[in-house]
Image 1 (cartoon, one colour):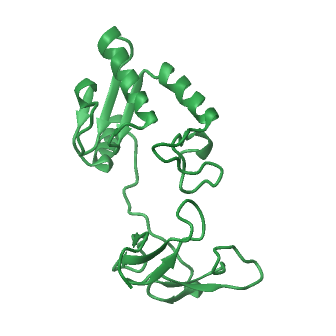
Image 2 (cartoon, rainbow, N blue to C red):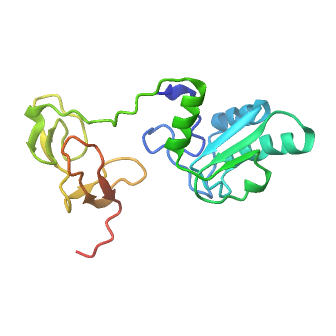
Length: 198
C-alpha cells in the first residue's frame, strides 16, 4: 500500500490517535495545513476520487489546480471521479461519473500496469475460529491488547452488539447489520451508533 507517512490526512484520521478527526467547525493541525498549502501551490494535476467536495479545506487542492489551468493555462487542472455531482464540476478538466475501482483498473490497463484483480480474502487461523463469524482475539473488553494468554470472543454475527473502545466514537454501541455469506470474506457492515430502540 501507500506509505502512511506520505498521506496528509488533513481533516484527521479515524485510525491515528495523534491526528483525531476534525469537525467542520474545528481547527486543522498547523503542520498538516502548511503541507497542504505547499502541495496546493506545486500541483500540476489533482485527481479527486470519491469526494463530495462539499466545502472542506482540502477542496482547495482541486479548486486551485483547476483555476491555474483555466485562468492561466498552467498545469493540467483537475480530474474528479465519482457518482456525486460537486460544486467544482464546472471547472474541472475531466469529470468521470463511474466507479473508482473500474476507472483505476482501466487506467492501469492503459498504462500497462499489471494489477492483480483477485478479491482480498481475510485469512484467519483455524484455532481462532469459534464458529462462523465468531473469533478468538487477544484483546480484553476495554480494547486493550493482552499478551498473557488471555483472550475474548469477538462476535460478528448479524445482530451482534459491539462497543467502540477508542477514537472519536469511544463508548458508542453498535450492531452488526450484515455478515458475509462466505466466512473467509472480510465484508461486514456495522452501524455506529446503534439507533435501534432496545
